[in-house]
Image (cartoon, rainbow, N blue to C red; front, side, top):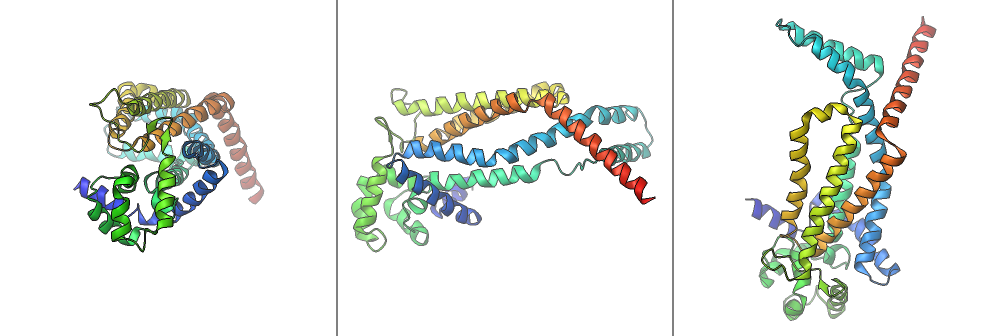
Length: 328
């Protein structure tokens, strides 16, 4: 079931609702390739940095929301402790009422936990996948969406990342594409793919290849290893910052450690299932996230965020109190 779903998504060039974003990012990447003389990996690094910079205000807002929530945790825990040993079924309702009253006094909406910005970031970053996974459609500009299944069948491609596989074996497939899909793959389009393919090398390493755990002599094996290292570094730093931001998280020691290790090793596993170019993007994304976390820790440290949240909350509360007095 999973294989069929992922294959369908790949052959159809991604999620339908993200296609406008894929197209927009494809044009941006095309512009960067022109600017940097078709140096694909330099363009990808610049693109990743720029998108992270665009998302930085949302990340900062999310951190501020987390700080405000963390500031209220001691008061919430005090209320929860008050009702911990009570057996009356109505105690839970009283507890919730007191917590709700606390939120109202502090002007904090518990439902507004930064999910909106996080969701936007996820959609935005998923949009980048379009230029990594589907370059023929969105960067080279060959609209293969209507014949993707027929092309995949003719080339006998069954991998998840159909377009990257096509690039990897383009020299073998060129005649088939010209003969069976000549209207779509004109000589000019085939030359454009060949030109794009020629820039998919990092030094002498073919980045369209899928790393194999059975061949440690191939330099491309470095991609999964660096995926693991950079993802682990980003996860560890993020966990340390979150613990400082919200001391209550420290009590979840083993759970936090498990979650911290799970994603890096998952990305390590997946990096053996995708082309090295995809893994390279993950590495760059992890490094940029790591730098971003260090910058935020230096200029927007957790303690300062909590203190700022306390000041802002006090100002808001006094403003509401003054408004109530003026209306009487």
